[in-house]
Length: 304
Image 1 (cartoon, rainbow, N blue to C red):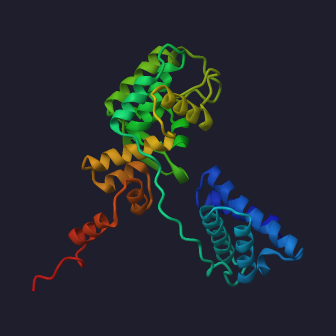
Image 2 (cartoon, rainbow, N blue to C red):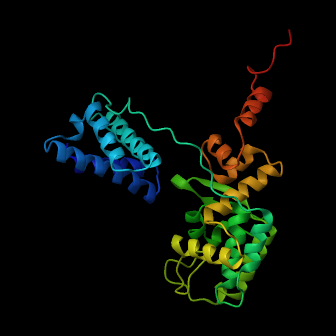
Image 3 (spheres, helix red, strand yellow):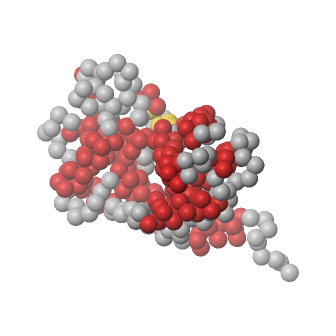
């Protein structure tokens, strides 16, 4: 089995069995391609079946020497573990050489969060005299109202919005669907955008159902969303870095601070693990401990 053969097989597994997004699949494959290039340079005949723990450890050490961050190291190790776990599952190898690899410890880093006043300042700073002004205002309201990832926003379809019930259906990571309430202000701004701009636009073929469109009638890119937010933050006079993820983080933080149940927030964000939600919402482990204490039958105090 050559590296190219193993990587192609791994790609099929990630797409068909793991249902990962295109970006996630490419991230995994890029990490494995780098490993393969290292192994072939070290020993030209070294194929995936012959890779040992020592070789992997050497590679991680070499990766560290290039100055990559601990987070990048951890991601590479995660990809390598997934790759060899797949090869073991597929019967291509008898032992997994990546089992004992240790990822570097990464501190919890949180993106900045906007206050309610800063969110309002940004929305009010949108220049409605521009042709794309109403669209941009609807974008900000939707990001804050629903806590969407930027990839979910640019792919949001008009058919996924139920204006009558006030819910939208989101297709998140791994093609997993979730239902998120659409706030009244976001609903109003989207309707205004539809009536004022989108309904009058010529849509490019294949983009007729995409909600937010550019001047060519096609979907917006992720970079365009970042630029819209960056420019609006400057107009609002905010002296901080603001991204689409800042809106997602603010959405979750404001909900939890207002008393929302963390499990509900987890569902709306589309997180598989509640630990991820706990990080996003600035909660400490005492909340999780109290949840176990209050609701798990084996964690309640003895009555004796």
